[in-house]
Length: 425
Image (cartoon, rainbow, N blue to C red; front, side, top):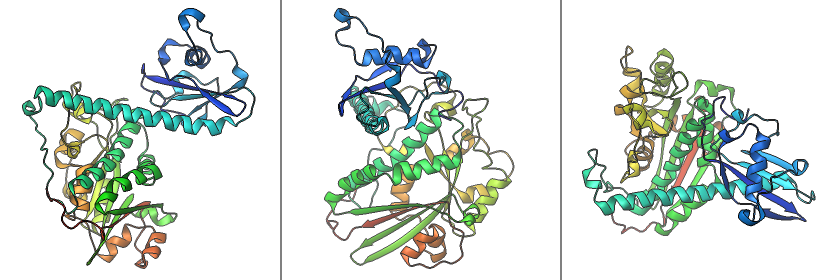
């Protein structure tokens, strides 16, 4: 299935078009188009592809596209038949239309690079717009009037401030990935979201390379390893294990945390202040908390949320709020200690409104708490429980018959060449 049964209507649906002629690819313009203006996919594409390759419309008029036999349509890498109903298409990802007039290149090879290029441009545009809004607020002196002020100073850290920011930007990309998925499909399953988190962020080569480039000037080398357990025993373990290894002159340290994932569930098709995280505060959630805590006190629940969580909790439309720090990004992922869940009783702490004050931002948690060293279990059993069995063998820690997590993410930070005189803030 291509999308949520009830996709959000938007005037920002995008059609990308490319024409293949003699092994060359001609790109059309990016055409934003509203699904609601058309009765069928064919009508939508006939107009939008015509617009994509139109010249001077005032002089030449608009030539509607009609070469349907040469057209292949893709969305998220999957081919979309022309008979597909508009209701089943997503509006948060583009329709990529490849017109192969001479069959010199396979259409599916052209689709991926076109969509990747569009996504890069979209992200750059969002960053520029966000930066412009912050600059305007600072110019007008509005930041000092915000009632829930966000501190701009970075707390003390053992790595340089610019590397701290680079790491926070990286983990913020994980937050953004989850919030976008849940915003596009409120029924997206938890395991699917965790898979997206691991493979679309942590295991993605371009994101890893970008982070490495940002850390390298300070003499910090980072390697990230991701793996999914093939063991049937994974159902008894945690959803996700994180293990960080820090290597430096006179320092070798390895610490682990365990996590279970819970996503916010909509009520009657939409998220609200009374939405709940599934069975988090029920007997099943408490049982999961106790199983993780029997291995290590460094056990947590990752709470997956859609965009605009603050407006959902406040029951009011959200106006733009410029955060001076990534530490307070509540959308996407929040972190709740498993000990809190295990110690809760009754039904008084069920909804997102009740639980939000007891959570922390995933960005701040991972960088200022986990990477910094405030938390994490260095014990052999906890480290073993955070890894798949293959990763345990590679790390030479042995197999203690501890259940493997479904997903494992390992961070190795080599600070052997880090400048010793960096400024601590």
